[in-house]
Image: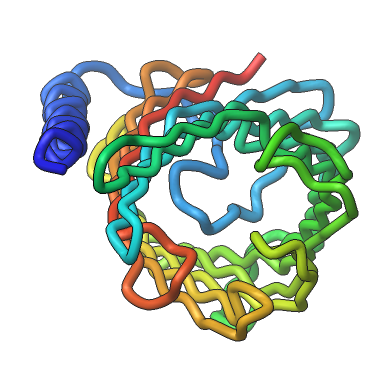
Length: 272
């Protein structure tokens, strides 16, 4: 157990080191205005849409620890592919990728590995941001989870989710994002359920390259057992150039049975 905890905190310290290096380097050079806009590492999807003819990949490693009941740790590789098909419309394909769960028993550890299901989706820009609070930048995002994946991570029936994505420019350096949506999913007992989701993310741009965010996420229910979940997280984003972004984030579940006690993620996003 102590070895697992040490591994997690090494990842947290490494995440902080990356953010510090980014802070030092961010003082050098100005960035062009047309820079990559990503939907990671937070869970609040942005209203921005990939421009027509551009392709974007957002990929990462995600490590989760859950000490409720049986101690488990999970490694995932979330990846999102985005392609702009026209002005204001992008097509998306997303998955948690390869997943590995290690359960720490009293005498031995058990390991399960496989591939997560695939989500197919579309994001549609409804309007640009207006001059009043009542007119944020607004987009619609719809995802369908197709039966796919392998082993314990596979899904043999469809699921889906729809969200409205809103963004406000508060000041030159501060921004606010929010998502409201609902969907249908399948829990670990293979029971389907309808859920609602709401997110709120506050972002601060410190320089042309360096930004931070703070986020709270609610989902209810999180399974067919009618549990409700709250999650909080924070992170750093760093623009290496106008088409490449690095990020790190750390978060924790506040309430709920399905959310991890601690998660750490680090990723890279590239635009072509």
